[in-house]
Length: 485
Image 1 (cartoon, helix red, strand yellow):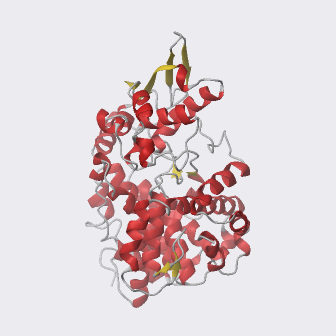
Image 2 (image 1 turned 30 degrees about the horizontal axis):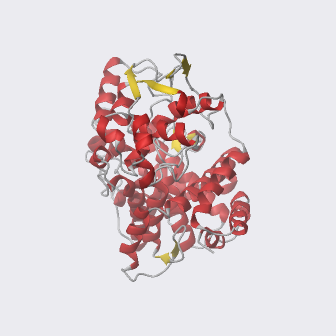
Image 3 (image 1 turned 135 degrees about the vertical axis):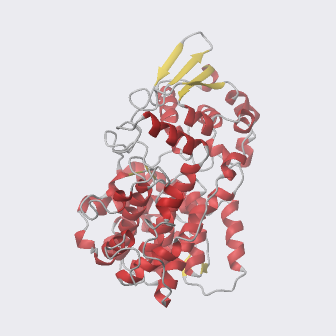
């Protein structure tokens, strides 16, 4: 019975879109972009599968004795589909090397969405076209849920737009308290549920119910980020796991609330508070493709550091060496300082996970190794006294004006011979004005995928299959190449 209004709820509108969307309805440029992000995400997940955190999370499920339905990236066994989704979500998220929705509200979308899609797709023997369609649905839902919670930072409702001083104050308070991290994981719950429901062949009514069911999952408190603990890297796995479970429950006939988004005790009122905008959930759905806002990362680590990384890397490409550096001064707004520089001692002595968010460590590692990659955060790397000493000479200047515009990523490098070098990087590789090449994306993929110690021939076969994903009849035929030979 429709209790709050006879008008369709947001979940019903999103569900109808998910149920009706055909592969042929998706613009070719969106299909191409979604395929690229699937390729990238699988490579990141294969690398992530070699990390201790992933092995630890998998051991829990290996004891459960559940049916073996879906592949675990980088490992030689299968798990029940919801458990494989969780394991692969951990693998995708723990590297912090996955894509980021820089201009919209979806935050890190693929770490949730691809994990759920691969598990549900393998369970249902979905084709490549079906997987692409489901992932596209997931991106659209995630970006819209995030935007409704005002997660977008740089886009049409972001910090370079028409925000008032009061808006900035509210948003800064949210960031300082870690609320943006909480909100950043919530879109994944609804995206994973919706795409898994589509792959399971559920009706629009069942997809709406599944969204209502998953609404009760996940608080995603981010104290872990402050302490360098391991909890945060599990969040994307939990979203994928809960999404697949909720879709399966809806298939069994369990009903969720219709107004999970806009109800009096729904997402927007409870989590969105005074920074909510319900119109973002369905505005121009099916005509404006928010999937196009998703951008790849070409350095592992928090995306807030990448402009600084690009700046230092550019100077190094012009001849700067670690031995030349006396001091590096980063000009950053308070949000970036709180997240990437403070507390100082924690950032100078990080764990293998928290190092991914320490700008002093990352810039020192880059200067010494002249590169950043998936192995840059190994235990022996983050305790390297040479890196720690250089990191102690990397400082910041608080400047709220530099994050937007041409000064983003401004670094001032003071050299031992007295010279001073300056560089900023407003555009990252993969931004519209700096498009990546196929060599960029395949090179990153192979660097990641090779960590599972498989054969080059299997990696090449995997790349070929993913680049022609629309021709694949059963996604399980592709997943077999993501495991060791």
